[in-house]
Amino acid sequence: MELKHESNSQATRGRHVEILTGNHAASHAARMARVDVVSAYPITPQSPVVEKISEFIASGEMSARMIRVESEQSAMASCISASITGARVFTATSANGLAYMNEQLAWAAGTRLPLVMCVVTRALAAPWSVWTDHQDAISQRDTGWMQVFCEDNQEIYDTVLEAYKVAENDNIFLPIMVCFDGYILSHTTMPVELLSQNEVDTFLPSFNSHLKLHEKIDEPVGVNPVTLPDPREGFPGYMEFRYRLQKTIEKAIDVFEDIERDFASLSGRNHGGVVRGYKMEDADIAIVGMGSASSQAKKAIPHLREQGIKAGVLTIRLFRPFPKARIREALKNVKQVVVFDRDVAYGLEGAISAELKSALYNRKHQPHVQGFIVGLGGRDFKTEHVIHGTKMAMEYAEKNEVPDETKWLGVDK
Amino acid sequence: MVDYKDPKSTIAAVQVPSEGEAGKTGSWRSFKPVFNPEKCILIKSEKARCHICWMFCPEVAITKSRPPTINLDYCKGCGICSTECPHGAITMKKE
Image (cartoon, rainbow over the protein chains, first blue to last red):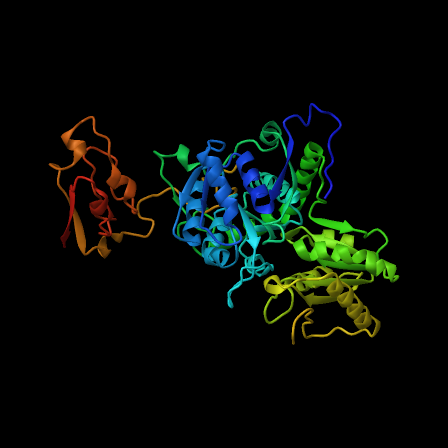
């Protein structure tokens, strides 16, 4: 990780570097974003995010209201209610806790509430596992939430701040998940540069809700009444609302990139926007992954290059909305794509692999794409898996084969 | 900024409650709310503020007046007003 300090000391006054876990980097971001309401239910490996926030509240460093609840479903319901009144809201969860929120996630997106939720990724039971993979977050991809995946603790801190800015944008108003790998980031310490409170306040002014029910106490309204199949007396039907949601989330790619540019000029750190290339300039082969899968792929690049294989890594940072055009642009010069999924769209294949193919289909340039399932339930995803998978994929491409069955690496078959 | 009253720009389904959204729902009722003015704090004290029944009525069948009145054309008889009234001023009687 690179920390670029601005030469101008005025600009960086009040900044400082702390040694933080990924979880605590998220807590600090929520504190500095001046979140009004936090509601969450403990679950490993997320719990320290909210525990730290409760310490901030207890010590007076943060003036948020903490709502303690009996389940994740209630946590999300409380977040929704608080956000409807115009509060800036934060929560965090993992795995089965996220799954338990599923129904409320759809309400949050449908009500267009700019919630920010950290998803500390963990395998979904059964069987019970507390270790990382991306199945929990991937399983919620169709709820209408935006999803970003992080690769280091600095990126977690920065992304939570960016996430509020994107979610609360006047043209967006959509909830967003900031996802990062359980343990690999959540419980690992790294130096994280915190911006000054002044800088954060300038970047992230107070939240201007589209609902503002707290201002309308004498003018009650009903939120989310039964909405009929067809518009009636000018009131949109269900499909009109869903159309607006999809058209908005499509716009979020550009908005995210604009905000990333603003954030980069403020902080001196650029995380690459919606996708991030590593040694991609001259690459023939692109290795694609998210979060820890992508970090591991980078470790393999020197070894592959030593063997004469010109590979680079394309990290997908924004998974929802899926940045199809940016991915095509990044892959325009490669002959081959190797995807490592720490998830399975059961009955199909790895989710990233499937979506990447759909982004390339019906286009002129169609590199060979081979996906691998790796690192489920905290199984180590190793450099040797990256090298082995890349070589397997090269053989398939050589023979012009596209196997229908999924390929798994690092599993006792 | 989004105006929820403007159907073209509204992004979330928000409705200003109004009478008769689902027809004359009073016919659905099997229990009728009966208002006891002697117990209602709004009648007992001119300075009192309450209108909890008005706030909770999902059918907007209760008026924000002193005393509140109940429009039986639309009251479905759900009993929420009776449950929520902190002074026990509304009782549910079988029709």
